[in-house]
Amino acid sequence: MDRKKFLTLSSLGLSSLPLFSFAASAGTKPIVISTWESGMGVNGAAWEVLSKPGGRALDAVEAGAVHIENEISCCVGLGGYPDRDGIVTLDACIMDEHANCGAVAGIEQIKHPISVARKVMEKTPHVILVGNGAQQFAIENGFPKEPAELSEDAKKAYAEWLKKSEYKPVINIENKKQNGPFAPNFFEDGSPNHDTMGLVAMDANNNLSGAVTTSGMAFKLHGRVGDSPIIGAGLFVDNEVGAATSSGLGEEVIRICGTHLVVEFMRQGYSPEAACKKACERIVNRDRAKAKTLQVGFVALNKKGEYGAYSIQSGFVFSVKSGKENRVYQSKFILKNDGTVK
Ligand code: ASP
Image (cartoon, rainbow, N blue to C red):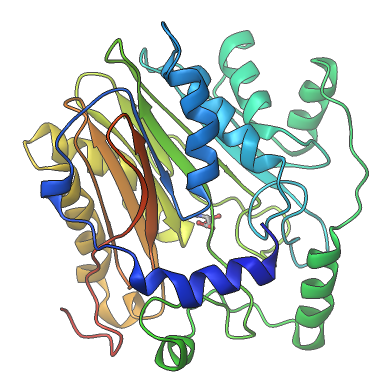
């Protein structure tokens, strides 16, 4: 999705979306849940797999991630915004119902990091490959090396960012004041900075899987890795309990092992929404002043096919596709736009 379309959808359309309430989540399978409104297309690609007899959640989440990696987006794939040195580096991970998992971090010039992550999972004894090693492994496994060119959109955004070269991964409260509480989370220079694609699915055989793919935070330090490719931070799947994924300021998610925490709360009996809320509270309660400046959102799916989400600030949305529905919901959130607790 290009940036203009992203902005239009995000600032004008989202406030009219239904606010998710747990009652909506009756529990069904197969089902796929993705972060953000771009999750609608992602879910569609995943559904092609899930709706076929024997369709496996693992194949579905990979297909969903491949779909968004093929789009030009600010925040996923080779068209994404670069780091502060002007280089696009991608992070991805995947996890299946047997706790098999694979990830790549900081990989360059490879179009489908999610499929490389799956190869790491299936063909090596390791979980994570990074940087040049990840790229070398990808090439050895038949993934073509793509040109290092930035997308037109990314070129413009990078040129704009270079004027000040300020590294400020904070949300712009003014943007929310001007464009309403559902305006997306922007850097102070106006560029969107959080839009990782994370998705979790359960297939007709009751098996869960998840995938995450991202270009990470725009204009990050070269070599920075966020939560997205870290199992237990950006993604966690426990086939007995449920699965969760995240988007937002990855450092904060890593600090609490966010998605592992969400799944453990579900193991204790919390609903997916309550589990996501408790993980957000863990971040907010540690440092309220800091929490006002950042966004984190979680989505979760349990073994009954119930799902939910929660975020720290307003503006986090997620997409759901099952035999019963195909829609985007706003997630509930903890902090009001003035930073006080709702
Ligand atoms: N979680 C991602 C990261 O920290 C950012 C995002 O959600 O867009 O890299």
